Image (tube, rainbow, N blue to C red; front, side):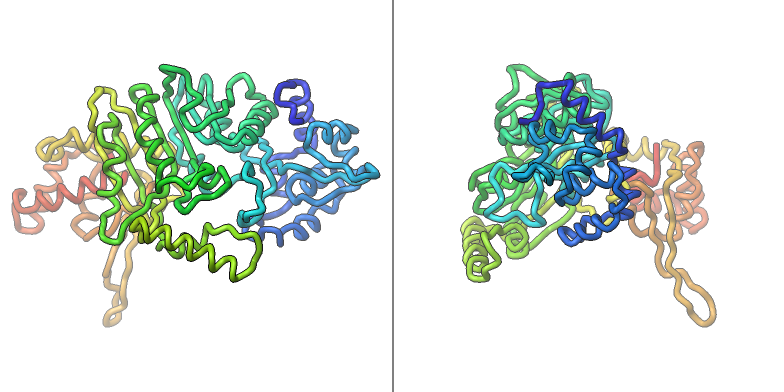
Length: 494
């Protein structure tokens, strides 16, 4: 039984791990690389790189590679507490008591150590319904893009192992973590205790907002929900345990979260949504946010055809081609019955309006460019830039003094023509931004370079017009539209 209610036991576990140096940096240094892509094929690699016999080597073999170790090695690494770790449910001992095997994986994220279930590279029907996943790519994406401002209270919906909740504890006075999976609630509570956050993070069992108290509001809500769209799965981490209508979980978050957000509060969640063959995805999402009192930014990151999406998520009991083909037909019939041609993936960020108005700004954008270097601070900054643009008409924009961001970078493409390099295209990007600022012509390059924070845009465009033998009235419409786009992307700053 995991010692979720035993602070001394949790502290003892963490003490042993810390004494061995069990953490992200030390493990990465020992293993030498991220071997995630190898899946189970990484196990012999890890074993070979942890042959030194140190406590850290033993703990990595146990809780990262999942291989059995001799009892003597376990005793040395666990300070003689092997029996106790087995009693706590972290280890299994063989019948002779001479070999120890980890029952849970202990993953590391920064200074955090979190227990999760051992996961197959691809879930199968044989995977237990209450399986608690490790750090999936979507989990890490949400962690990176979460807006982290001081919060009186933060809510983590569908907490799983509790990673989002524990990360939120660093900037929150208190955190509530909910999950429909009782096993996830127990693991999240254990992880909070091991990381010394049991007094900050409260774990509650229930579906989405159901465990909340009447009138309970939060400055921040985060969720990596079970967003898979298909005929249903028994696995709670995939589809919430049911074969309900498409997008039910994500729609519920979009509709219900604002009632639990304080003014100015943020809600961020990853989502899948289904798209018909003849319907624009932006129009499809608009009803999600009608009258919810939030400004919304939806970033569509990826689209998959329905058949490709089904192939990714179908779970089978074996590798039998006939079983797979039967499941594939069932999924495709389900999609056809609902007019689903493709499935989109993206991030939804909502900010509760301070003025109490029911209808906020809804921006739906496709971002195929830069993403991996962006973080929550850039998401918040983008909202501030959108606020400024909405409040700034063309007259005010001409009077504004803009500056070129220090992170803006210009990349030119040149072609050799008759012995000379001739520019044929140019791209402007923002390091750490979300999406590319896009192509830019020589006149745009000229204006952006001269945005120094002191010269008004009117002065710059008047000078540009004179250089072109034109006037401001002719230059301004196209230039102002381009400038607004560059402000949106963070290349130009008010």
